[in-house]
Image (cartoon, rainbow, N blue to C red; front, side, top):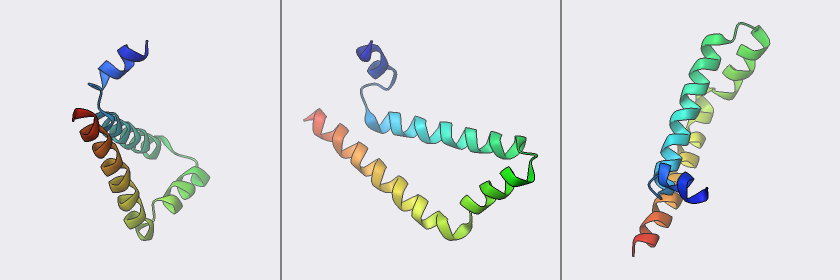
Length: 76
């Protein structure tokens, strides 16, 4: 079973990470579109304040580099 799961991502952690990012983006967009409760909308807007975006970008970059280095190391 694990071999089949790994084959979905072509044995690449980088591809897995990219798909996780896409899924998270879709989920966030859907949540924002469907959130009609002011408390939910307020909580989402608090988490997505512009002052936090640099930290999100740094975290995403670090995880991407770690995933890419792992994949590159396994190709040697």
